[in-house]
Image (cartoon, rainbow, N blue to C red; front, side):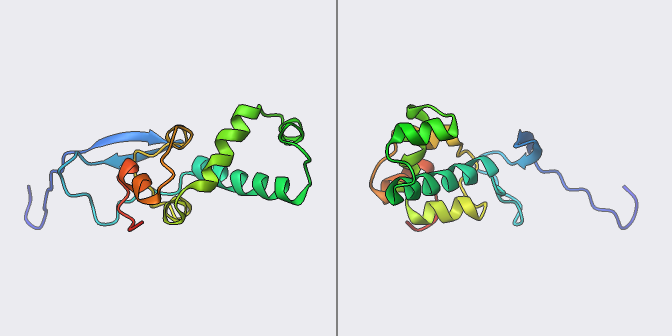
Length: 131
C-alpha cells in the first residue's frame, strides 16, 4: 500500500434484487450508514393495487370480486391476497413506500397469513419502525 492510501475490509455479499445488485453485510456486523433496502417496486405496486381495488369495490365500480377479477385478468385468490395488504400496519406501509422495509421482506411474505395486530406484524418482519 502506498502512502496516503487506506484499505478497508468489510465482509459482505452481493445479492440481486429487482434487477439491481445490493451489498448485504453479515448478521452481527454494522451496515454502512447509507445502506438501506431501497424501494421495492413489486411491494409498492401491490400496496397500490390493494388500495385501488378496495376503493373500486367500495365505490361500486365493480359489483363483485369476480367482476374485479375479470377486469384485471387475475384470479379471485390473488385478489384476496392483495386486498389483505390493506390491513398492514400504517407504519409498515410507509416503510415500504419509502424503501425502508426490512431487507428480507418479499411480497410472498406479505401474502402469507400475517397477524392482524400491528405490533405483531412488526415482530414478524423484524421491523424497527415503532409500530
